[in-house]
Image (cartoon, rainbow, N blue to C red):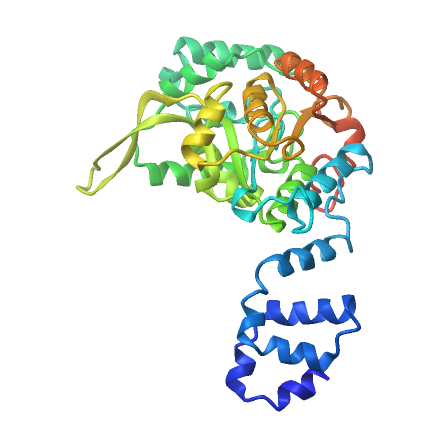
Length: 378
């Protein structure tokens, strides 16, 4: 019937009907059979009806479609998965008392230990070591020698990993800042992430991402959330992989950073260079401060795994109305498929239990942990 009606309408009117409008037509004909197809077709062709299609109607359509298939297939059914779905449904349905407009839907995710593994040592450390593997002079720097010795001695302890402090990592980075333009540095990072292999698992580092968490990011994006990665790691390091690995654009990455300098290159052009000086440390209290600085939003969803994420949790929990925030703590308790440890997460675990925040058990809540490689399950 719709085809018959549209065939009688001049072409300019047909071209003005968007795909979204046609989808809305299909939704209403199924949901409201009492309305005649002819009436709906006329409504579609009027400007007043079209102007309302992009608000609450689209939200209802999307919410209806999302129930048709599992949005989180790598999650086991349980209270955590249901809490996520219930929260997203509640804040995205226009008729819900918990509805939150699209412009206020912000979610923040930590990276190391939240979106990918962090053992036996932060993956950025491996990148730094790879860049200096043929430089014997840099290997003699005290912090580099210490890290190399710790990795050699302790990397077989898969449950706890290498005992390297955040200060060690910062000192390593400061000691090995390359004197090259940022664009060239980014190319090096992108090449490394495509080829570098984890020493314990034999997987590419980029394939040691947590499949359920990547699904969660996609689910939130499908529901018009703006997703930020809020990492204690280097901002340039994470930006180089955020789009290809997580589907998060580089401008939605907030992280620890070196100071920048705009200066002349060897060929006379100008570019951004890194300086061997710390600008921002994006951890603990620095996380909410930098979220406010770089996003201008208070997250309604905050996801992390360590003590350094506690303040980000508090920022989301304490600055939204009751019931309008979701806190998710990733607990590493699966020694068979990943790692099992509470070190550097003791305080946030305690606070999560005290505040009834959602604690994700990797053992119980993740049906799969890593994505498949070459058709093989991980």
